[in-house]
Image 1 (cartoon, rainbow, N blue to C red):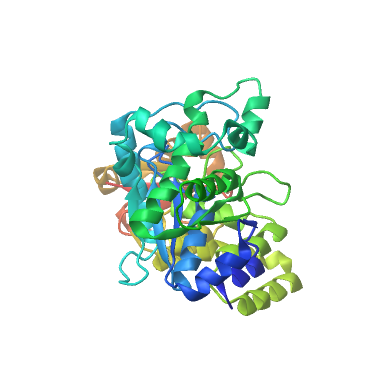
Image 2 (cartoon, rainbow, N blue to C red; image 1 turned 135 degrees about the horizontal axis):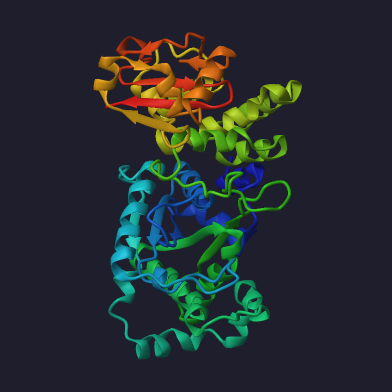
Length: 424
């Protein structure tokens, strides 16, 4: 299946500046360089960034070369698209650290090594740093009219709001258009992809190239990552953003986020993010519909995304940890298996000397699930305590190294409140 047809079949096709022309380009001039931009407002990307990244991945699998633009220059200004107010400006040191973090994450999501289609990383600071303000106005700014720019949704919505838009953010569209023109010159890049909120900025690049007598450039967007109610996806029930950095969002929490999506969302996300053929996905969805309580589609989405981001071995670990969190057996698990719960399950660290001396279970409960030793004693006598997910009732029990479920960890708590205990 041709790449554009596959994107349509998967629901990853929203708008295109010239469908017929792009079809011809992709068929006759492979490999085509395809770029997406990433705004370095943080040292970690979030799940919303997976949309342009899966576009790059699919074009790469179809034999084309991804170009990544990290906005070392435009990140100092901020994209007004989808924003209701001015964002804080970043200093150079923060931007440098953020760019480094994004580079590291994208190297896990795309192939950088293939000699023909390997992804290339660029930073737009490299071609804007030496351009003076007057040069930019003279050579770039004159080509796009105020009328053209204010007609774009990203600008129009801000002009209609109470906060308005500063000249700084208003100029973002020109800078992104300049990126596209520069990439066409330096990397023969003819196609820019992104989420649908970027369509106005992308078309500005196509228009700027036309006005400057450059090559015919193309733009393609995918739908935004929204749930079935139309709300942006990417935040947990507690309001925390779902990051791609495992230090910010653990692989376990990342997996669990996708497991909890609705049936409707799971079917759509599976087509978007699974690298399995569509025929195989259709089979999965038929099996899912036959018994939705098994949440097969959700599991397949979670596996696809967790494996892509954190590696295939992470899938088995998070699924083993998930079974533990819901009362499963800890036998045969390793430190690495339980470590994925750190940051998700509450965790207590204790010195090994405490285990060597024998720690009373009452004391351990009082430091974890119980408010006091008295409350801990009541939990025990009522049969509400579990050690490594096995019922425990002996109030005089002492915890020793023999109780460790792995080399350095054990789990203690109640049916609904489990703590991970890590021994140092």
